[in-house]
Length: 459
Image (cartoon, rainbow, N blue to C red; front, side, top):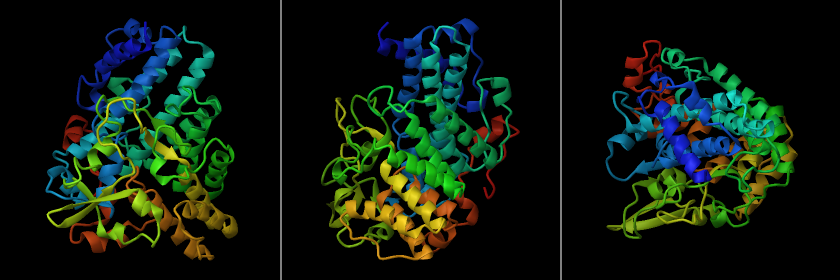
C-alpha cells in the first residue's frame, strides 16, 4: 500500500480514539486488539502512524502546535493586539479569559492533549508490535518521546499543573487529577533523555520534518533553562551549536524557508491552500486590508535603530490613514504546494540565547557576550556594550524579545519564568491584570466531566 494511503487509514482508525468524544480523558477504548495491532503490521505502517501525528499537529487552522502557541500568548503578553473586537482574542488580550466557553482554550488544551493521546497510542502500538524492526522501533519511539515532551512543555507552561497522561487507558484517563508541574517536567526530561539516546544524528526523512538526536538536545537545553539548571542548559545548547549541522541564516527573510539552515525541527504543511497557519492568520488578505492582529506600540518601540529584524520580520499596511504593523516572519498567506515555508518549531538562534543566559548566570561573561553578539551581528547591530552580570541578563532578555517575537509564545513564557510578568504587564493591562493570570483556566466542560480536575487558581 502507498505510504499516503497508510496515513489515511491509520488516521481514520486513530480517530476512533481522538474524536469520538470532545474530552480528552473520556475517549472510548479501542474496539479490538486486532484493530490496534494492525496499525503496526510492518515498518511502512508504523512510519505512516508517526507521520500521521505530524499531519495532525498541522492540519487544524490554529491549534497548540500550529500557531496557537504563538497567537494567544502574544496577545496575553505585550506583543500583539487584535485590531477589531473578537470574543476569542479580546479575552486573551485583556487577560480575562472566560472558561465557560473559549475557542482559544479549546485550541490549546484540547488539541494539545489530543496530540498526547495519539502519541501514547503510537508508543503502545510500537511496543506491542512483533513486525516492526527493532532499529525502526527505536527511531520512532524517540520521535514520539520528543513530540510528547514538546506538547507537555507548552501545556505545563500555559496551564500549570496538568493531568499526567501516559496511556490510552480511558478508564484511568477519565478521572486523572492535575499533577504538580514538577512531575510534568520530570516526564519531559525523561522523554527527552531517552529520545536523545534513541535517535540518530541524521534526520530520518532527509529534511528536518522529523526529530533527530539534536532536536532532543535542543529541547533539553530549553527545559533545563526553565528549571534554572544553568550547567546542563549550557551543555545541551553547546551540543547543538557544536554539531555544525545548523547555521544562522545570513538572510533574515529566508530564515523560515523550507531549506533554511537554521531550523532544528520544522514540520511540513499539509493544507492544499496555505503553508502555515501563522502566515494565514497574521498576514492580511491584501496590501489595503487591516490585519487581524497587529504589533503593539510597546514592541515597536523596543527596536534599536538599524535593527534589520524590524524591516525583515515586520510589515505595515495603512488603512483609513492609520498604520497597522503586523508579523512578517512567514511571508506566505495562501499558496498551493510545493511549500516554500515549513513551520519552524525550534531553531539555532534560541540555542545561542540559552547558552548566553546560562553562561551569565554562571558568571562566564566573556563567552556570554560572544553568544549575544552572534545574534546581534546577524541583525545588523554592533556588539553589545554591556559587561556586567545584571546588564547582560537584561541584554539577553531584550535580544530574546526581538529575535523570538511572536514565535511560539517565547515572550509570554519569558515574562513568567523570570517573574517579570506582573512588573511589565500590570501597568499595561490594568485594571484587569492579576498575578494568577500567568496561567490559563481550564474549560468548564473539562471540569464538569472529570470531578477530579480542579480549576486553575484565580478563576
